[in-house]
Image (cartoon, rainbow, N blue to C red):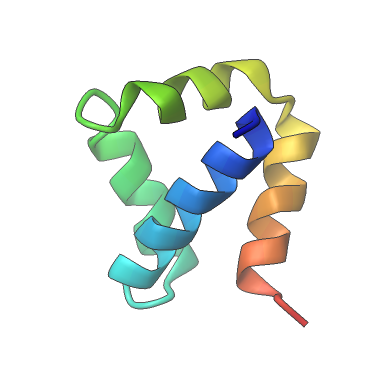
Length: 63
């Protein structure tokens, strides 16, 4: 998998676990940064802010 796929997969799962709340999802990622999988942390470091934002938009606005 590439970094975009890894990031989107983990963010999608967290978004669903957090009852589809953007605010809770962001708070969860910040609070649990050290407990998240290494592949997710690596993807976060390698993607630009623009790429991460585009992937998050794809998750919250799937249509």
